[in-house]
Image (cartoon, rainbow, N blue to C red):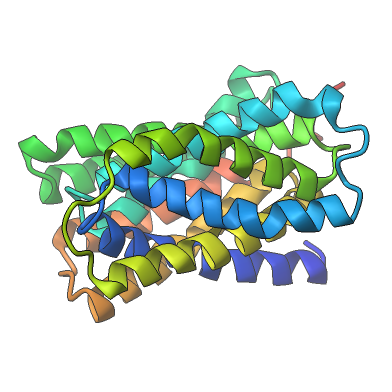
Length: 292
């Protein structure tokens, strides 16, 4: 990885380790749909004028269907599902569940023909990673919280598909135009839902500030870095940012929200990280297969 790639990697790993904290704070006071609508709306308001001023929308029409697909798999479903998951799970637990994104990305790449060879190390990584999730679920999650695990699993699938859509179908499109339009699309989509589910009682200031941070730092700025990182290191490698995300989320959860460090986290966390490392490590026995 180049020096630029390492800098982008470090920045995004830290930035995307913080949303779990802010989402948890926000959804304790407002509906997840309201949080998502304000989050994407604020980010769109910041990025759309910049993209327009730079003339990045010229020639964007052929890319619109793929931008819509990217918006659906990376934002529409995951942002809402993650919010609902954190109404039942701690931010630390949710972050560890989301940490299996590289493992799911490796499976999707294999299923879609983007990576046709899985050596024994990568297969072992898949087994260890999912074993870590099983440990977490078995030790820390009650039966009435399993629906939240399902929501997190769907979120993981969307996050794994997003970089693939970018790499395969949107590599030539201006990144700022892509993300600002995807956010604008979701802002329009969620606006009427949020209006119906708007809070009817006073909302604490920390919830509003959490949403502001989610919109500006964790969405607008983070997605700009996200696109540059995908271009620099590719979609599968890019998902390895989840190696550090859970660590940041756990630290913040323990310090800020006084969340417990459970046995499931202690045992499951290193298994998920090791599994992700092995599952995304290129096999030395073969050169990567070129794809059209």
